[in-house]
Length: 421
Image (cartoon, rainbow, N blue to C red; front, side, top):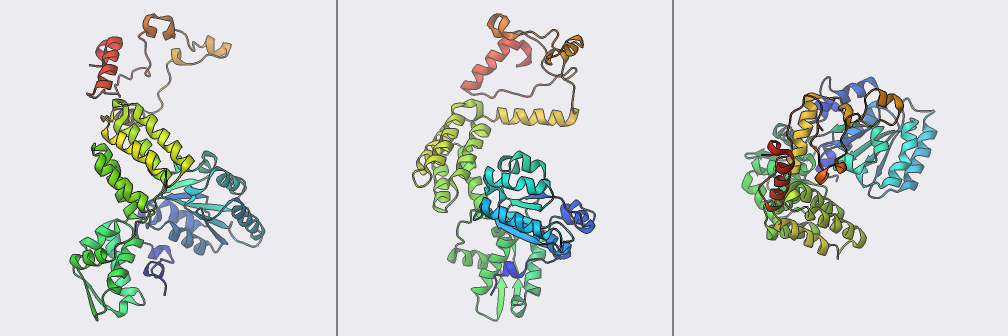
């Protein structure tokens, strides 16, 4: 018998739950599907929110050849075979064949490069699914050829609708007398993940052999304690534990950080995933209070990529403890956030002429670079001049109170006087 999550997989957009910003009436993906003109795109979102289901619905609706690959098990050879097969089908299909690649972020550069020509020439329409930020995981040439759509975790009302639909419409569950008296625990364990919700429901129902199944918070908690769900490195617990890990580092608790690191290692988490989060934490949470943290986190990343498991746990633990025990500052993180907010508000302000390069005579005649003061020609390698666009009087970086930034702030006050108070 198929798992409940497979039995409940929607077949049409009307049965699809959630993501109304993409597939609701008048939304962009629905318009594309209804028009029959689909361009290549990437679906980015947490597990269990309908990425794979959406790809299948599109292929069914358009009645086009549908190929699927998993980036975990497929290589360049598999990609080329699919492209060759798709090319042969072009003559007989109403629409371009669709190639769906699950976990496309796991494809390396060579594997992603192998897709470029087929996407560009329209041999295939690529639909990729990823739980990782495409900006970091998808090569720029491929990303530039695809639209990016962000899927959200399912809301409470979406999950309750799915729960009710499973109980009343599933071929097996509707034969059972199932009453949901309390739903808080089942929603909490699902974490916005439809697949996790249905797995929990199935587990609770199967554990009850009586004619009438009553679901309460106590029943759900008890069943899951007796049958603990394994660490799912693509599921909700994956996100909960990495969150606890990062927050323990941010909160300067090396014991908590090591505990959650151990949980991830025992659960089979990818070492590069942990190492990447350490690099981010070093820049975001430790920052200028201890710039060496970023160097050590990056060195740990390199070491892990070279040696893998099980020895990789040692540099990860070293970096974890160092980051957790380091002084903390998020001034750089807040500074770039403030600068981005200003750019979004004020738009593309022109670069002042004296800051522009002047590689041609025409540019020199137009005043490019005129009046620029070369800092190294002045005492202390500093001279006061304007570096922001004309008319923009703003301060983005605000030093925070710690020994390292106190020294930086004092230097800035010496150079810029009242600008850094």
